[in-house]
Image (cartoon, rainbow, N blue to C red; front, side):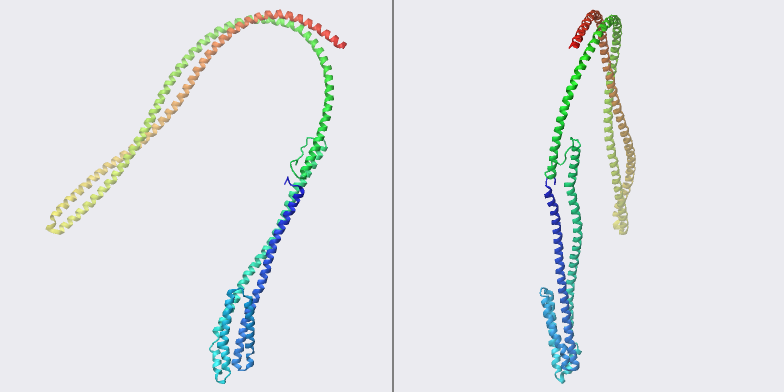
Length: 558
């Protein structure tokens, strides 16, 4: 939107309003046409229902006229019958025309016409012919009494009811369509009002953001520039609409004012610089004269102080030389002691390294023992499982022995029943029973032994578990000791290294003290030279005073 001109922005906003209004009007017109179509078809349905009722009324008139003729025998009584025929034919023609596009209704109307024609030919016209003769009038009346035309009339009534029900179903569908269209129109009208209000609000907001707000911002910037705030930033310069053109023009105006103000300030600055330069020259000359006079006086005073300091420095240098010799002797003795400590620290570091090796070996041994204990624990657990499996097998063997004993008992009973023929079988059965009994006893003994093995194995498993736990703790403690020994070794090595450095530092101190003694001797020589130079400085100070006095007199004359 920033790169679109104001006229195009307005066209976009009003175009959106027109498009929305057109779309909503289109929806309203479409549903209005639906309402009109629904209303037309509703009227059509009522006309069809009215003609269906007319058909039924015409059949009732025909039936009434026919019955009246059967009762009176007078031709005048047939007038409703004949009028009903004409009315039926006219109503049938109209209703078939109205329902020409509805095949189901056409089929029902054909059935009504066929039933009506059957009633007329087989009942009404036959009865009228029989009523023409006095001899057959009773037969004509019997037609009505026996209900000869009831089937046809019931059929006509049923089909007319179906026609009316079909139209009422269409009427209900069309009424729903009408209500839907009316609801849609109401909803669209309400939504169109809301949408128009929203679009109007958005349009006002956009126009305000695109026109009013930028103009107010630019007006504020203009006021600040007019008040002399030439550093004010001009916004909206990147826009390609009229606001952007105004902003660019204001920026050009601000730059022109800034350039003019800069030129004015530069001119004033140059004039001020010239005034300050002149004043600075005058002040510099005065300061130079005063400073040079002070320096001349200071040189004379300082030369005397330098001579005094040189004498003091010579005495201090002699004392420093004596103290340096004493410090050198003490430093040599300290170096000897530090060397002794360094040797002891190195021996201690070697011992710590040996301990560290032994602890590391202990850690490895503890790890191996832990692994072996875990392996033994696993094998003992497997042994416990095998012992449990042996117990299951023993139970199975015991069950087989019990079953064998039972079978031997049954065989003995059967052999006893067989008499002499079963004696040999009885002996075999007794032997089998004895073997089964021995097997059961042996199985019980084996089970008891296996139970003892299981108890011993369970105890061994618990003991091995405890051993594994203890060895694990030993391994952890060994690891901790190894870490501590490593830290102690590192600390001992650090002590040895620091002692070596201290020894080196002590030697360096001895060397430095020797250098201090030499420097003290050199300082004594320098102090002697300094006293010689101070005499020359006093002479130069007198010359400087003379030069300054000459400069002052010439500067005053200029």
